[in-house]
Image (cartoon, rainbow, N blue to C red):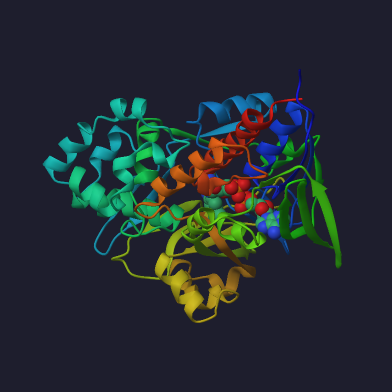
Length: 440
Ligand SMILES: Cc1cc2nc3c(=O)[nH]c(=O)nc-3n(C[C@H](O)[C@H](O)[C@H](O)COP(=O)(O)OP(=O)(O)OC[C@H]3O[C@@H](n4cnc5c(N)ncnc54)[C@H](O)[C@@H]3O)c2cc1C
């Protein structure tokens, strides 16, 4: 006999929450999503401030996850994928410049400054074999890599110059992670699926297409912040703030899909093991200054090494679009050190002051051409997979899957610090609920 449908509240309409909600609704449950922000998407989607356009977070889709590709097919977004081939940046060191590829391939062997041994090690890295043994949606699929820092992992296996000239600039410039502050879990579980594949994707019409398509047909209350969740034998009470009012929703089950560092604060009655896990969930922060220009620019993208010291890790010139009337923009992403300084000096809303000298050096016409600027501060950019975290995450997931619960957690911090990881985590929460409570 079919199980009765549950009333399920999903807290958070990021990719994890939307994916979980969608699958639970398909299973036949009555699902409502509560989102603190003004629109679904969380760290995915476009924003516009005074004519300055930018992304809330993710800019690229990595097509290495089979379940995610199947999800895109199901929601009709596969035709909207636009391939971006051989994405690369000019890497600026203290004495020279070279090209670094985001999807390393054979041409990466031409990177200057590598020794012959390092080049040979790169060729012999055994990526095909690693590809079969690792899951790009799960940072815990490479347990040995979880135990060491990324810096040690690369130095030992590939060499110090590979670390300094190929890996560190990309990790600092895209993830805002220093290789000695994270484990090798993210690298070791994703790199085998990236190397030799020269294509990443964006969505035609922007990244916001993804949350829009996932949200289609779901009941979502935006501008609704959950303040407390109580569980009892009979169900869950979800306290929310909405338009200055305090309201309460009742549900049989809750899926908590907020950023991991916010999740435990919503509960008064978590068991000690769960509380201990959440105490170890950390995110890094990121600052980006976006400048709107009143003249056209040539496209450019640069990563700066740590040795070429400065507050900017990634620099981009984004040409305007004469057809749509969109203005050209400059993009200055802070280095991990400048992010720390912004926090310590309370300057998260004045990032432009931290980078202004560097930006003027990179674009001498700034004062003449800049029409406006926007400081984007992302307090929780990515979950930090520091050494040992993936194992603790995997233990937590096993406990969640082991027996029926009233509350299930999902998010990128429980899988992989990527859109694909967030979706995989949402799918896992929906699967756990189906296993524990049956499907109507
Ligand atoms: C700058 C940046 C660049 C990135 N680049 C890439 C990339 O190129 N490719 C890639 O694959 N990934 C990238 N990522 C990572 C990717 O965006 C995330 O891994 C993914 O979007 C996380 O989804 P999520 O659902 O786990 O969390 P989130 O998107 O953070 O969703 C959590 C949601 O919960 C809501 N919430 C929080 N508290 C409450 C509350 N109390 N009540 C109600 N709602 C609440 C939040 O508002 C949010 O909408 C990037 C991230 C950032 C920030």
